[in-house]
Length: 625
Image 1 (tube, rainbow, N blue to C red):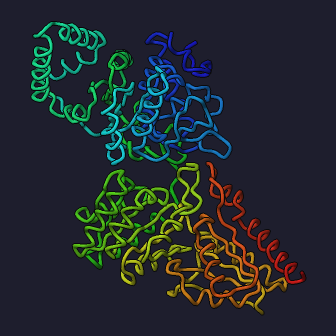
Image 2 (image 1 turned 90 degrees about the horizontal axis):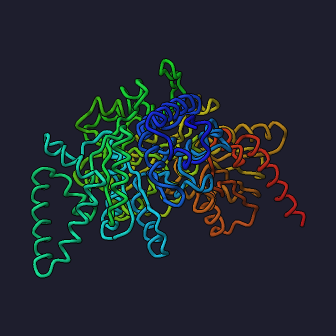
């Protein structure tokens, strides 16, 4: 039973020989390529982790042993081996399987790790729980070298290394060279230290020496000191992990099943935390991904035969990058910062044109913010381009390292609102609520490309302190392509009378305007107010809204802490006694397309029309009561 489609539990691969396992690895890769070509997803890293995943399930037994995958960039083979082959075609689709580990989806998924650098800390906690509850299972954290650029990974290493729990951290190194290869001797010692017999022999010698009266312990200490001196001269960089308290093993060829099997068995015999360094090739087995691993890291649909993807259309990210390049040509104080998202945030062109003014901080949003604040202290104009679901990781740095000092840092917040495909960990619903709590923040919400360019210029030159521009993933709404942005804090589109006012911002403005226009043509007075600048909220907005019997706020963001809640509180303080209601996000949104997500949240045209109809009826009923 070596065919992927016949495997319903990872236990079934334990008895397979090496040729059967190699056949299984080929089938895993083919399934991934075929599926991701139709659904999109994270391909390169997953292709590189196939043999590692197979070896893990051959040596360990989940869920008794716990594997924590850092992000979903490496977990596709794991999903396929844990009875999800038949559902794998639904990857990242509405009601399908997630692109990230998800305990509610399978008992073999231990922790939701949609954000990077969390695996070691989570595994440290799980291993400690096992120790305290007399559970003799192992806990394994699999982390890529990219995720090791995040500070949380080092916090986890520092704490975990002080324990004596059954914890194994596997560093899947597919790009960055962490340990140096220092000739034949270093390679030989590396290979030797990864053998089960060597580890067991060393432990037996240590135990035997400790039992020798008088001389045993001093001699043991002498050997240990001599060993450290030799390792420092031959394997210099291994001391980093060992100084953290880990037993270092590796590097091991991550595509050699025999070596992986031996190394994992050896790791099981060490009675303290282990760091197993595995070297893999990103995109392994698919030539297009091997040659261009970054392109195929997170990829949309493509032709698996040619590797070609449909030509991408224009989008907010690309327009942001173009606008920033134009502004940088006018002002050499402008610098761009990203957290390992150069392509995703549209900064590839900026990096090529202004290499000395472009900075990739790695997966370290906290550092990126404080780094930007430091550059602002030096008179530069830093623009930190970051995804909405990742900016929330840097709240402390925004508040304490930037806002308190009134340093001028511009945040280009990409992927705001409903984000397609990646699921609950990547939805951009919470940036407005977060920034609302930081004093002195200016926040813009463009609805189309022209307004994005205007707001970026305003954020750079018309504000101080933190200035943010938030925009969605994808293209501008077709209904707003011809909309001419205004320089002011809001746009007001009155109608006859003072019956109903609908307030909104961002890309929802197109559907809101269309729905309200239809109501107007049917003789039902409905005015629209579009917020251009969300923060600080212009006092005139409250004055305008107070004049209406019914005020409705429609928002593609969190209800709690959002702008709808904020305007409602300001109206209440101003003595407003009319009907007020908010349509915003009150749930965690799973994987879906943008259209599906907006529909589910009642934020598409039909949902907006229904909301306005229902709330105006409630307002009328309240008057009659």
